[in-house]
Length: 521
Image (cartoon, rainbow, N blue to C red; front, side, top):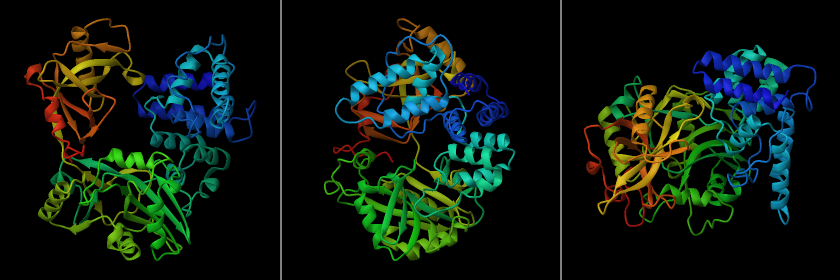
């Protein structure tokens, strides 16, 4: 199979909004990778690589390549000849380069790889390596396509995917061994499980409407998701993305070893707290966990567990939440468990929500007590509720869309008003935009363009006010105001407001205390 075939599939995926058409395109590509004939590499390798690329990611955790490394490409090849397996081999080699001379070796390897690619393939490779291969093909859709390509029940594919960090091995098993191979994927202590995810509700009342009867309301901590596997004295800690960060979290390992269990798989959150027990900024927690060089003694982390998937030889993943929580409370004890209330009363849950937010936490996660742990899915059994904050900001620039948004002006740059004059950028977003909104803003910002319009970023006159919802504010060295919005999304454009009525930078900064702690959530 040639890489050019995947590029064609990527282009077609980006051009359609039909879920059925996307699934068909993905299935065709997977079948092509599995077809006998001129297979590049051992049986199954090509399937796994192709499936990974179709999901928008390569198989290597790190390549050492960034925007600067890929800024200038060598002359492109005249005709396709590169294969997905050859690309994977090249990226694997790059991932192992280290030490003296590695920078030169890396540059040579990149030049060699990209010189073998056509112009279209070079663009594909660049976006793949940088994690920007947006084509509207989510992992859940890829799993459906794997089932269709292998002619196996989708429920069997989804069940197997619960116990695999990547979809590539699932595709390989399905297309080479069918249902029998997929049945080999099951919960195994020491191997990460895809985390269960929560949907969202605008408020407590809206969240409770989705449940019948009693619910569990867990405090939503603003830390990093950790999945902790215990086998005797051995402990492994995985992140939400299923990376092994055990050596970076000795305090989490110590807590896990203190539990009276022989074997367990726990789901939880690790975060930094101040002396009063309030959460420190998420950036502090991320800094502690994001590097091997951080010093635990300087900023210790606290871990709190909210679910238990396995205990002493018994899998609990299919058990109802009430049973899992009872087992968790017994195994971990109150000091290691996320604060929780269980109630049928809306007033009780609302009061708990308000107290939780007042303590500086993000909000609540409401949970169906009868539901199993739906690994890897964002279903209706967990519903997160966070306070919604809004600001009226001014659009300073807009970026040209790609993929499904090709031809539209999409990502907007957001500015707060500076009382001394002008506007200060706080970040950018494309979240919350409907097709109607994209069409409107493309016309509007073309009219407001202030300078060349043929570049990727189009600067506009600061005249359009937009109402932005966001989850919080954090310190930022990236933007000139020193702060940035977290999870910003567009609510509506405010034609009824003038730019001089937009919120000020001081308003945004007041959401941080003198230590830079987010007070908005």
